[in-house]
Length: 278
Image (spheres, rainbow, N blue to C red):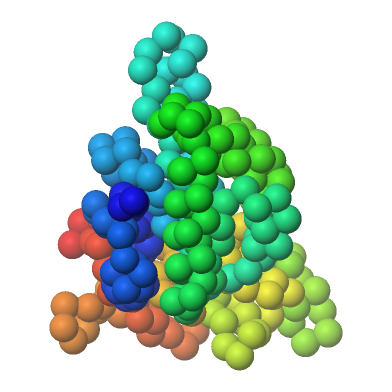
């Protein structure tokens, strides 16, 4: 049985790697690819795939928020006695395992960690194939997929339809032996190096107690801060200059004392152009 699939990830290399492994596994037809949660919602509603390989951390709308939006639309359509398309099975994919244990606890959906392993990809595909075959009808399979997603969202403390908590206005930054409360507006950027997250403001530099940039992003205002590169989060309001770089890429010169230059990943180039109308 051939499984129809979508791949949603903000990194082109990750999409290419997963597509290659799915081709090796066989009997998986990739219908389309997307780069963010908004595209995920649109592509799922357009193609109605059996499974979606969905990155967790993406600009604009993360993977969990994309699923929540789909479920909200389906529930609204059902309440209005309109046709609600079947929700696909979802395999979350990310470089970080902070949600993996809870996802596996209920076996609600599968969860792949980057870099992808061929055996794990094959196992995830087989798990979806088994669940699809177990459904007596497309409707039964869709109901089970939705129930699994609903359980996972509850485990992640992200109830469907509920907005994420508003991030705090200030952030704790350790500078030498002091713990300083810093207004988010004063932060120029944050960078991770060998597991340590540096937080740079216009006046000083310190460290965050967060373990990953994903964890830090949960504390930052998503309207102000942007993951310009895998290793950098920047304050959009603190970008001094956008500099064209080689092969149609860009660097950002920030507003800190050192006027630090930060690369923009190829996957985020389109977002940069959207932000500044390039």
